[in-house]
Length: 332
Image (tube, rainbow, N blue to C red):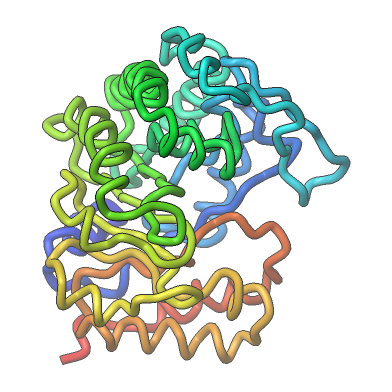
C-alpha cells in the first residue's frame, strides 16, 4: 500500500498492511516563513515515512489579523503567546469585522500548503489546520473573559462568532480549493471542563457545522481534534468528518471506549504529555502495540494525542516509526 491507500483503508475500517500513522509538531520561530515551514514538514515526512502531512501554521495564526499581538521567544522550542488580547469588554465582540480567509496570516498558511503540495504527489495526503470558531474566540479573549461573556452577554458573543465563522469557513474553503485533501479541525472548547452540553450546542456546534458544511462534499480526509481533558465526544459524533483525535492516553477516554461509540476512524494511541515526552522507547512501543490491539487492527491512525510538545526526545519519535512499521495487518 502507498500512503494514500493506507489512509483511505484506515478511514473506511478496512484492513491495512500495517497501521497508518502520523506525527506533527510546531516549529517555533520557523513556522511564519512559508517556505521554511514547508521544508521542515516535508523533511519530517520523508524521515519518518509518515502516511500524511498535517500542515502546522503556528497556533495563533487565525487571530493575528484581527489585532492579537504576539510575544515571541528566542530559540526553537517556545511558540509565541498572546501579549495583548483583543477582547476585553462585551462590546469588543461587535467590533470584529470579516477578514478574507486568503489574506494576511491565512495567506502564509496557504502558501506553505502550496509549497508542500508542489513537492508531493497524490500518494501523500496533505491536510490543513483549521481552528474552530470558538477556539479562535478563545485565543482573542482568554478563557475567563470568554466564559464570562458567553454567559452574561451571549448575544454579542454570537455576533462575534458569526464573523469568525465566516472568515474561518472561507479559509477552509480556500485550503481545499488549493489542493488540501481535508482539514485538521481543532477545537479547544469541546470539553466539559469549560462548557455545559447546552453551551456547547449553542456556541460551538452551529459554527463548527457551518465551517465543515462548506467543505464536506469536496474532501475525503477530515480529522476533528478535541483538545484537552474531558472531551465531549458524544456531542461531536454527528460532525461531517472521517476521523476523531483527542488525548486518549493523557486524558481519556480510551480508544476501545470510543470505538464502542462510533465507527469513525480514530487517531491516537500514544501519550504526547506522558509517554512520548517522559517515557522510554520501550514504553512508546508498548503503547503503539496496545493501541493496535484495542481496535483489533482496523480503523486507526496511530498518532500522538496532540502535537504541541517541542521537547519530545527524538528517540521516542523514531521508536513510534519503528513500532508502526513493524506491525502487520489486523490483529485478528
